[in-house]
Length: 204
Image 1 (cartoon, rainbow, N blue to C red):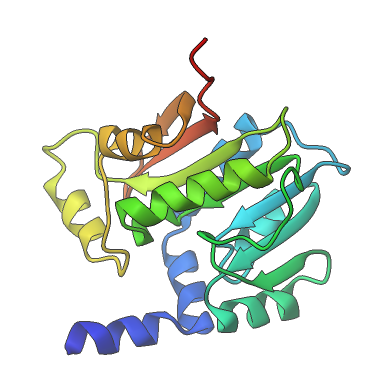
Image 2: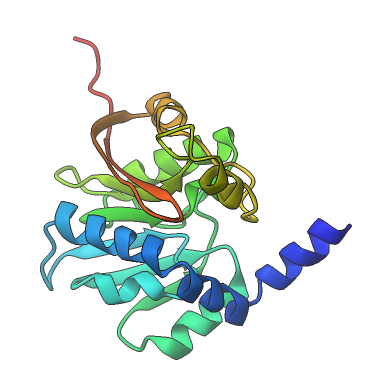
């Protein structure tokens, strides 16, 4: 009961933003990976799955659309960012036509999704991205070094119940698609992974 009450509090936009502030070392790694791994221009159309209150918008110099399942987050994002489109939507059931976006990203979302939901989000992301684009996943992972027990314990306190190790995250995504590139930045609070995900080529 206490955990459910705590999760309801953590769903509040103001608390979400406070967590972003406290987690700045991790947020900076998210931003670094987005900046270094995505070649974006002002004309690139980007869909952000699980956009929260829109914090990632500042890292995206492109035509930005964000969706989130939490309608309060979406309302807060609209108030904070006039230069983006924010929509209340489930990332596992996107209401966009195929090939609607140049690139699709997801930042700090996978650890909130079970394996089936993550697979569904991946399929939907690859459905709505154009042929030359990809699905870019950026999220915290359990520490690469298992000796970092304090860092692992800290992450397991997160309201996201599906913290994964790098190989677990890659393994789940690979059931649905191909992980073309992966990269990890270690940090004091979390290690952060980047995956570039593309459709699996059909067997000739």
